[in-house]
Image (cartoon, rainbow, N blue to C red; front, side, top):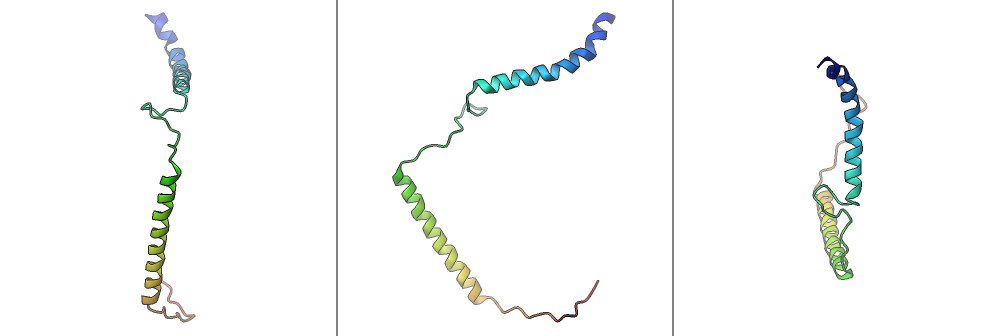
Length: 88
């Protein structure tokens, strides 16, 4: 029993690198797939889907620009502060 206890620190020190090596080997076998076996490469979409996405994004951009214009038009002018500011 005493001889086994003398090897315990060495076994503990070796277990981490061995475990990491096994994990890297296992993950390398998946060839780019995630942990759940999902392929991590982005899906390919036909050009029609891309054109539709571009149209939607352009409409969103137009709406946002209109909202910004409305906010600028309704904004109150900010009063300029004097050079004297209160210190706390």
